[in-house]
Length: 435
Image 1 (cartoon, one colour):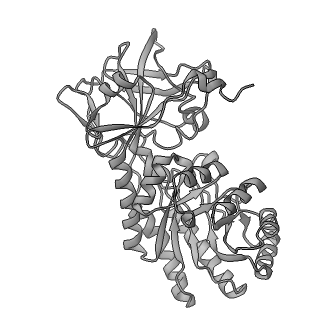
Image 2 (tube, rainbow, N blue to C red):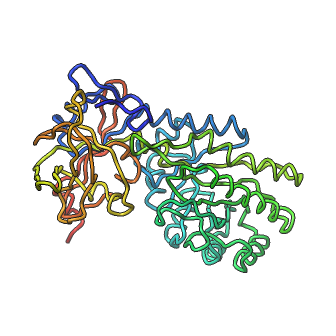
């Protein structure tokens, strides 16, 4: 097998003299022996490379800009520390994500709170710990904020639904007209929200936000949404006398999950978004807003892999060969949820030629617990160390204790050293909160 050229694996991935997969200067087979499996493995160098690439690409294209990391993709204390060191802001969607940021001493002024149904408890907590940027999703939430904010002003952005369908999976397409997220353009609710903001002392209108979906490969959809949102900047500025200081265009840039995938670059995304905004604002004589982008998957997706050990192997003649591993849908529900496709490698046989097509099955009691339907691999044997690439985003975040299995350990690697970022759960953790 070979290391793909399309960033499918972390930047530091290579094959060492033993024919083993090495990431961050650490032998993955050795890690599996020392820590057991499954392992969520992250390459810190790749994380930092992606952050720097995104920040520099946007700055070069549109100097008046900033990057927020979409925490829902993968958020732990170590991650927030790296974000702070690299100068990124943070997009959060729950009280729990805010708590992680607070516990890591992340600067709260760089946190933006999103969500279509923020609870009163979450909003109170956000205000209490110093979150000052709230992305308002609907009129009900705005009215709730009016009742809560009575002393210190907060910044708000309106999330709008631009009506753009990027043709990704329906579950991760969020900018269509039929969406649970955001104000509809030209709606009565939006007009009411505008009037409410203009009359309230403590709500400081900062700007607009949209997000059209995830895993987008065609940048024309970013351009279309930017054209629509730029016209909204004109409407808010000239019609409603609410200058737009910040225009947050969300995230959604796709990554490679298969060797054949060829996603666009952050630079291509930045250009597709920035050009229409500049054109419209210059035409209308409006000051350019600060442009915000919110990558999540792009930052962490290919920086992470999941390491498993092969267990039972079942061959059904002329039908298929099942190769079962010691994880599955509880540590990666995306194949069942989105029909997501992944690529597998045998970390202990990287020099071997792929000779068979197998189905990678999980260990959980569901017939649908299939991680990869058709994986092309060298001859697979019990005890092999199997790695699934591009699992850095939405795997740890979506993991569960289904079948009462403890969640995997999270390990970071860098410059030949490994570090435990999150300890492996124990059986005792499964009952710790039970009475």
